[in-house]
Image (cartoon, rainbow over all chains, first blue to last red; front, top):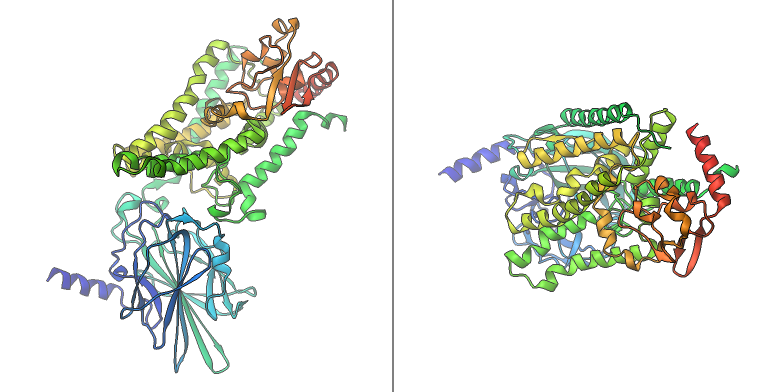
Length: 272
Length: 333
């Protein structure tokens, strides 16, 4: 009974998120149950199972490994189970499908642990994966994570060429869609909202949320739609870390140093 | 123009170049990602928290390995070799770098060392009375601190965290208090590392120490030479390998050395031992940063030498001593 009520509540909360768009989500993530990672970017908190939401007909999927090799994935309904990672680094989950309305694609990046691949993540992000693609420039670093209240830059590309003056939409679980327009180089910058609820003190006590970027572009008669979905964490500086106190402590440390200087000067010590 | 032709001037140019590379390198030379860093085991305090940095220091992987890998020997019955392989790779890379440049990473390349020296130059130009050498007693009291920091903050506490005796905040305690973390990130316009955490007592204590230490270091650097370098845990780590370093300070002393002490006065780390008589002996001390000031300020021909392998690359002389002393007087006004 409790589970049913919880599911209804969650469904009500997420009503409208990613509406109609095909996007990747960790299995169970729609309920916000992705394990909070104590080690951002180490991959320990990554889910092994993902669901392709609003999956279209004829959709195929594959994984691009950190060494840029491809590995096909198989859907079970709309979910895929990731194989045990052979190497450490960034992976890209790619799905592409089509129907009479157009061509749909979804991408998600994962950082998983393993033997180093010795291939730069820049090669993975710059590798063309689908026709219309939202490319992080850069994708957050291995030991970092997407964080609320911080800004991130992306490029929207079509057939591996920047797509200018095109609208891109950002959605999160708790913030309605916001629109951004790409500049003449296809670049747009978003600021992830600080929209976490029931925040607990301590990074590992708070589950990451999800954001979804979506864009569309018509090329002749064909409509291309693409999404990029990623987790993001709350920013401790918005909650239990005080930057003004930090600056104050630095100032106090500086004053202590000046006290030592005064004492040294009064003692009349001078360097030759 | 002649004033610029000194070892210190050359060192400043190299320090500035290294600073740009290590603090902003990802925007110019390397890329943003950890995978793309030059060594990931630098024997200098270039910080991994700096997202624009070109490389980062060996102490962060070492702490992580203690926390996540070496601790597995005690908690998961991990095979010893499997648990130690990461640490051995770190130490191996570190040893190769020390072989090439030895402790010159401190005196010539460390961003935090250069930052402190820059503040010291500002202090001198502002007319702030500079402190001379610390007494032997004071130096003897300060010296063990770096070993304490290395053993406890870099090795033991992260290991105890991995075993489960301590909370996660003690997983990389040296990074949590390191002034380079605050300095390098602030230099790139990222103020997120200046904070006091209220997550728990451990986080609170570490963040408070970090901020106080940074403020104290900046103020002390105005009148004390290299304040943080004296307690930097990189020195003990370098010492483990300094015997294999091709670059070294070699002394071929004579009877004048008992009375002169010019080298000690010039030494920013107050190493009194370098004035002892020595005959063609490697005198690279644990605290030495191979800055070369002792060679510049030694008034005797061929007594203090920088050697790289069998080659002497810099030697003390009366002429260079006179020139250097003159420049020093001009600089201090």
